[in-house]
Length: 189
Image 1: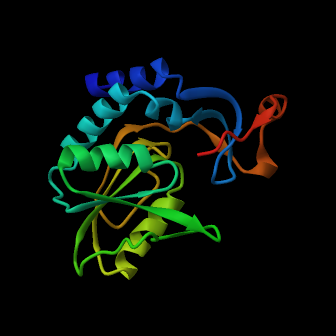
Image 2: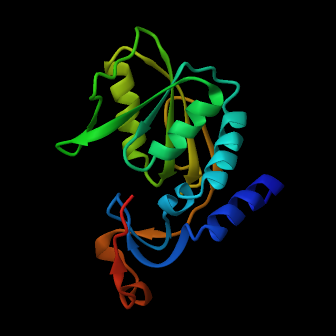
Image 3: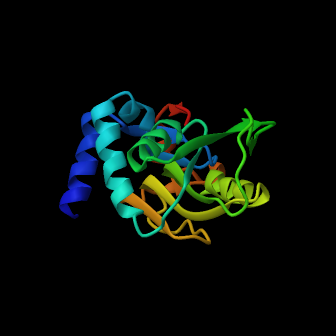
C-alpha cells in the first residue's frame, strides 16, 4: 500500500466510514463490508483532503464541469469542482433513472468529469456517462473515492480512484452461511 493509500484508508477508518457487518449494497449484492461515505462527508477536513488527492489524479484530463450522481457523489463532487475552480452540477433520480434537472445543461462538447464516492459495479457511473453524451457533453474521465471492484468495473473513459479494494460480494441467492447469520443492513448510498 502506498503512503497515500494508507492515509486514505486512515481517513475512512477515523471517520467510521468503513463498516463491517452484513450489508445489501445498492447493486443488490451482499457484503460483509460497506463504505458509508456519508460518514466521511460530514468531516470537511477529510472531504477537502480526499478531493485534493482526486484533483491531483485527474490533472491529465482537463475538464470544465464536474457531474456527480445524487446522493453519493454530491459532497465530494462539489469539493473537487471547488478545488479545480470549475462548474459543478449533479444528476438526480427520477423514476429510478438519473436525469439532469434544475435547468442543468451542457454546451456542445463541454468536457465533463464524473465524480462518484464508491463504485461496486458502476451502474450510476454508466448512467452519468450516457447522460452527458445525450446532453451534448463530452465525458473525459471518471474519478471516485473507492473502487470496490478493484478495477473490474470498466468505463470507456479514463478512470481514477483513491482506493481499489475488493471485498467479496455475493448475489442474494449465494450468501454464505456465516454471513446469513449476521442481521442484514441496507444503510443506503
